[in-house]
Image (cartoon, rainbow, N blue to C red; front, side, top):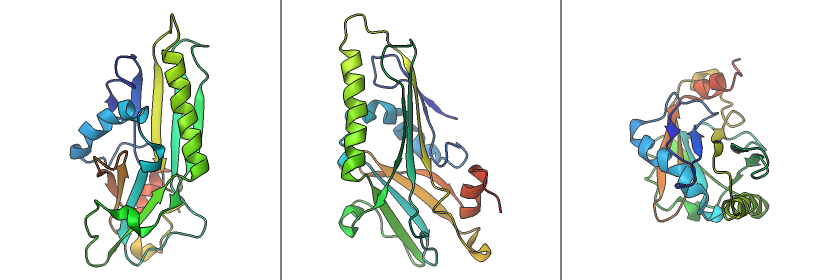
Length: 198
C-alpha cells in the first residue's frame, strides 16, 4: 500500500489511498504522485467533478444495476475531535459528454464513465464541511486516518473467455487536471482482489 504523506496538508492526517478494491497491486508508477495528492484534494474537490472511468474490452458490458463504489473511511486520531466517517457511495453511469479529456479507447475497447448522483454529491459535501468545521475549532486535536478505495467487483462479471482481457480504471478529481490511471489488471484480478474467485 502506498500511503500519502498527509490528508488535508498542514492538518497532520495520514492517508492510505488505494484503488481497485483497496488493493495496491496494479497501480501504475505514474499514478503515485497523483494519488499522494488525492487526500489533500478531497477536501476542496467539487463532488460534481469527481468521476471514475473504466476501460474494458468492447465485448464486456456492465451487469444491470452494477456500479463502482467509492469508499471513504475517516477516523480521528483523538476520539471526539470529529465524528468518524464510514461512507460507501455507489457511482452512476454518466453521459457521453463527460468523457472529455479521455483518449479514444482504441479498436475493440470501450469506456464506462461514472459520476456521483446529486444525493451522493451532497453526502460528500457533508463530509467536507464536517472536517473543515473540526479543523476550525480552538484546540483542534489534529490527526486521523483516511482510507479511500474504489470497489469494482460488481462490474467485473465476464465470461471465462474474457477473464484475462485488459481492465484499466481512471479517476478524475477535477476537470482542470483531468483523468489519471489508478489501476490496471484483468476482470479476473478484480474479482480475486475482492475475494470473489469463481
